[in-house]
Image 1 (tube, rainbow, N blue to C red):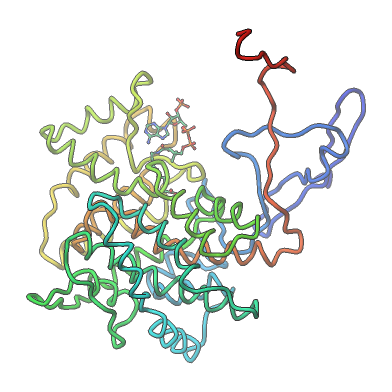
Image 2: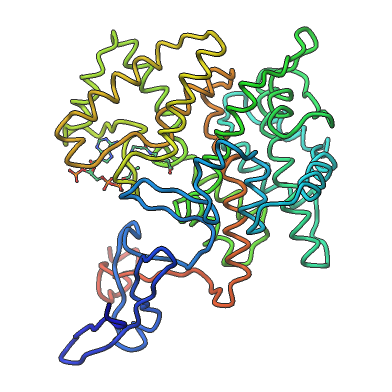
Length: 426
Ligand code: CMC
């Protein structure tokens, strides 16, 4: 392979090095493009732009591969826990048994939220979306936990706080939205079981931990833990590049995740399936609408910027839907509907030509429903899962010796210099 790429512009030839990643992906390094040629690149949606080099997550969209630090997600989903996977992403290695035990102790120590924060929760209007609340509250954490002087200590404690407290805060917002008393974490429960306990325990009906649901939650969060340079992760890196504190960067990531084209799709899928069900189960109408260019409707939970094959996460979640529902003796008509819709879409020429397959959000909502998670909390569940990825990517970016303030350029298309017209002359 040629080591350089040549660009010919206005009769002059410029050469740019080719960068090759460990899995053979190639890029032209154009860091000196403007300096050398006066040109910039234009790439709406950054579909062809690498914003960084990263050793965290590898995806191959054509082959449907996803690996964290080299380990296939399928293996992590089967054998690992969410906390072990989070450790792997953030620390670049699997923890020893003792280290994992130590993490549990630290998480317990950090699992409570400052009681004064409840005042904020109580003052959000009841109809507020939990994603808006979570983003605001994570940003507010900085005010409650001021910066420590020793940088390494500050980073370590902030990471632990975020991973442990965001889970408590999410459950707390659910309880308060119901007008129920907040449930405190239990030191004898592990991460996922503790979340379900805080969400669903009530004085009149103590929550019985169900191992099928705990395992389902582990897998759900493992599969959401990182996805390289997606919209919210790029947001965390970009906001972080201005050297804001980690709480503010994560808060921005949560806000970016909220959108229905990104993490908000899991809520949108269940709403879409419910609409189809209310329409007498006419899924073909949804497919026809998704194909109609005059209609802005899209099949939610289908398509992906990178995957042009079946999303490996969706494959695992689809199988898990069947297992969870079988083991709990639940029948969910939305699962049957989702399967019929998928089958019809995958044999439809439009979806075949556009390489549109179910993504992670297509089946995840069915599992969350089985747990009893309300639909408007689905994207919060995604956010808790994505937290280790955001943190790992932020850490990698701040440790990068080539770290630079994120600042894209533009091609200006507005008016040329125009004289200001005083108000009386207009
Ligand atoms: N339904 C119908 N048509 C679609 C869909 C869809 N879900 N997704 C893409 N297309 C079509 C689109 O209309 C366009 O057609 P044409 O080339 O004929 O104009 C073509 O496919 C390419 O679409 P695009 O928007 O340029 O592609 P993209 O790579 O920017 O889109 C996407 C990625 C996720 C925004 C898009 O597939 C989509 O809107 N999907 C539905 C929302 C969704 O499920 N989002 C969750 C993504 S996975 C979770 C995450 O990582 O956040």
